[in-house]
Amino acid sequence: MKTVVSTDLLVEKNFAMEIVQTFLEVYEDATMYTLAHKPGEILGPIEQRKITSSFLTHKIKNEQDLKKQSWLVPSACKKLHIPCSTDLILNVSRGLSQGISKCDKPKQITYLYDTAYLPGSGSLREKVFGSMVKNWAKKSFEQASEVWLSHESYQDFVKTGSDTKVKIVPPFIHVQDFPVGPKGVFDHNYYVINAESVDDILAEKLMRLFAKKGTPYIFVGQDAHLERLKTQEKQNLFHGYKCNGELAPLFAASRAVIDLTKEAFPTFALSALSTGRPVISTDNPFFDQKIKENSILVEKKPEEEIEKAIDQMDSEFAQYDPDQLHNTINKFHQARFKGEIIRLNP
Image 1 (cartoon, one colour):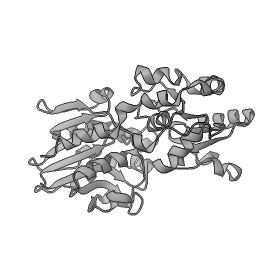
Image 2 (cartoon, rainbow, N blue to C red; image 1 turned 135 degrees about the horizontal axis):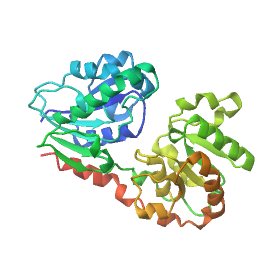
Image 3 (cartoon, helix red, strand yellow; image 1 turned 180 degrees about the horizontal axis):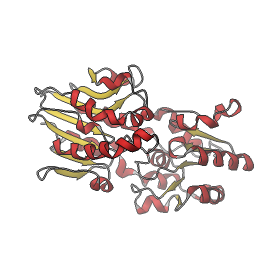
Image 4 (spheres, rainbow, N blue to C red; image 1 turned 135 degrees about the vertical axis):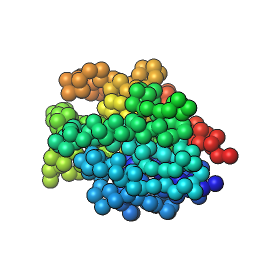
């Protein structure tokens, strides 16, 4: 069976790449199609596949570039045609790649992880063309035979035909990569902040708060949007993207992890809980009651409530049971997600 795995971008490491890689682990002979590819940036099994990209490869270097150039995506998808000889297309979408053109024959299964790559409202061009691109993106789901949604909240965004099957398939974390840290070894005296979940204003406020408290902290994750804060003396506070092997000990030794991801899958928060460390988070839609009860939630405006949440964590962090925190996230084990893919393989 000739199989293609398609996705929006292959230009920088992020959690969506782990989902792509999981599809490739099941379909070992699959080739790849993407809107833009930056060779050498992803590495691992993905780079070992044959990768075909669109003309946007010469224009897109990161997520911000894609948002600025989103008006070109419908044209790029039309010209990036998946061969008619393909039997199965497995598409991992962050809002756009479900529209890569194909013949009627191939069966397409689209997994909508999130809508992070939809156009924003920054530049005038984004505002003018944003509505057009979003309408095109919604309609593009009609070419899928089956649509998997990471969360039910995305149902309103997806427009499908009457025969299209839609199901909820939650994402995963590599639970085995984030074991509970050894007891009595760490001082738990610093915070890890998910840089991707804060803007520069809130990040700056966190820097001032921790400086006032004298509490160590680091930002981890893609942080290009925080460039203004990365001055010479603060550069060492920004650690950028880290793989699971690097994240796990950072989480396990921390006092707590701050992950203010509002709607997207909260990989930082769940991975931290897996290592037995408590989290400060917003009320994320992926949290069930058990996770909420074992977290300090910022209910309304983070910039107004974050100091109170940190004070509470400073006084309570030692009361959390690491094994209990770990057990709250078992439903997000990769084996469950992989099982859904294996069931597709005849």
